[in-house]
Length: 335
Image 1 (spheres, rainbow, N blue to C red):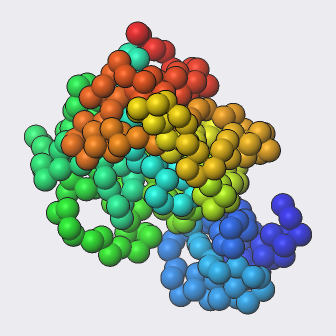
Image 2: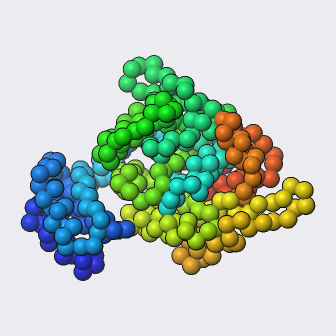
């Protein structure tokens, strides 16, 4: 614990007993106070947050309530039947994170792993569009749990399947996290070797809550090669390190444009930026995905390229990355 965090913990102890404070952490201009076995008290929490913000350069203070950690199963959300979970994340939007998540899930499924995809990008869910179940309501046989959508054996669920395409979700963090918990835990996933979670972009409350409440076995960071994207990718890596989620590696998306006529490579957003960042951060570099209109068109048409063109070069790029992820997580591939 840093000197600053020790000082802030002393402030928190003015409002809560020491045994009630699990941790006080400072990350990405946020102060995060995690309480254990404490009834929610908004008045006391607001007073604490105000005092913490006066003492730091942080932009925001967050109070997270958890249950006692008698064992891991008591404290985290239970996702029945799912053996391994990894998150696909990015420090910022617009880098192709969701496209990467969908195609990696499809690639793992093609390799023989029983795969599920959960769309946690709650304010911009795009999985229903890319898997072709947009405007289709999920089925519930018992009125309590949902059946996942299935696309060629790949199971999927998204909050986007519960709302209209043009309906904005104007929810604060606690309500959004509650919706994600309900959707994650009340789906009949069945027997799943690996679940891919498409995280929201950035390093906000939803990402922190999911990392703490879901047993995430690893995280894949997606970035383009350009500097402005890589700056935020580094923040994403550091967030997962802070919440003790292993970083499986970095994927460089839109790595280059390959001319279909002459085969010339054009590095539109810079060259090898993600690879060099991975080396500097001491994290694995998982591979490059080129910039190509086929990837975009297939996703918009409801068939990700790893499904639409399984023997093509772009599907092969996703398959190679999926194999590295499977090896890191010790996932049994049947093909």
